[in-house]
Length: 273
Image (cartoon, rainbow, N blue to C red; front, side, top):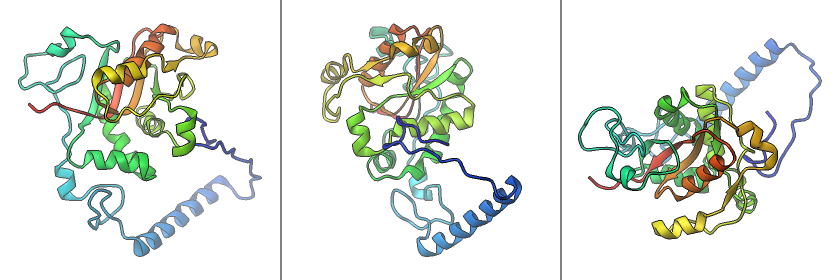
């Protein structure tokens, strides 16, 4: 698969290769090679929990203690914001926050609460190049997205400004979107939404400051508006805190002709009950 400029930086092209063996032979050889390399890697660097570094029997998961610290979000929740509710009042219930200040997006769903080992997993993915975590985290998100998938036309990862993409070398939202797309069958549109201006990091900013910071930060290119007209995209990001980033991105998609926008994140900040 060719590298995506909104997923990896810099762009590298896949050069065509002249076939010398049948695809079946190449596939079998590749599987054997990967298995052998995996066994050697496990001997040299035994699988470890990405959070606490405890030894694991196999790669791609968490230890039992860290797993128990992950809070998966389940019903009952606010149908609009996806925030957990203390009691189940039936389908279609909205939280006080959703009634008082309705968001631009139609529905938001998150896989887990941003607590316990989850912040460490997010930081490892974003800042420690632990892109190997994307399949596990994407699977969590695909599970949370089952309500949204039925109505969705595409997944749209929240883009990074090109300068930040150059420094980080990949867009974590795009990595997660591709994993969700692989599991749900939804196409991923990485060039539909652009970061039209560079914004300071949101860490440490309050709700109003975040909203001002993100105002006008996203745009849909004129040449992409036809792809969006009347469609229902799902915005994908790693963490939902105040919702300022997703609100700004949603408004850009709606202004460009989207019928409605849903939101999917790996984690969300949940206020203590």
